Image 1 (cartoon, rainbow, N blue to C red):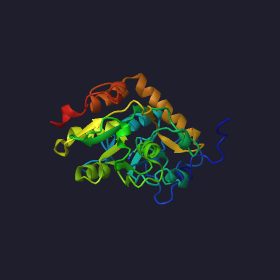
Image 2: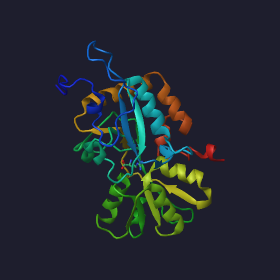
Image 3: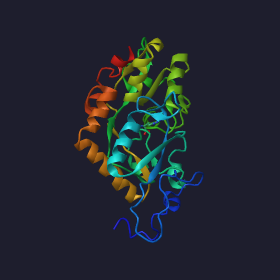
Length: 283
Ligand code: ARG
């Protein structure tokens, strides 16, 4: 069995395992006598909200984007609630073990290495690495980056891929706290290319015409899939998330959310050769 009979029944304070803030007052303490219906649990979600169109901060300073729409919809079906907290990418996975966050929803690629230390939901989005360069760049394939300075977001799959080409300790790998910072450095000329997830690169190019970037895909990049990460062993939460994902795929709301951001089904939006999907919205 993956999970055993709960010894402690839903005291929300214990169940959420949070240190800094007690859970929202939504769940009123049940009177001890009658078995009250289990209160809807509110899970704290960590998100590096500098990753449009997947996750970004709204004008009202709230985390928004495809990831938020998707997880909220899945939560509604799975019988739980989510509260998003903007969380720096560096160290984001440690917040699962510490209990500061229950879920990391941050366009996280499911990798074998990460699976050692956390559990993932079913995949909910297909992605692949993509190279961003200036419009006049001679770079035509990944291999052309060998002698160049390349920007990546620290600890991402883009970082890993570039390490394989340039070497783990290469001084030509410039690491940034966020992907937008890496792309700004490309505009400033501090790096000659940035390697990051296709959706984010395409969105940036489509919405920053002034930067005069283009994207270069490469057949050597292996397909990636995003999943929601939870603390290793949290089968209870994973089951709810997966049920939610199944439900929004079955009732069409998953497709509706994808269409809101890409105007196409995810498989098409994720294809490296797809024309910049967000361009229509940018003008
Ligand atoms: N998919 C890549 C990875 O998992 C990058 C994710 C970065 N996400 C973010 N919100 N900054 O490594």
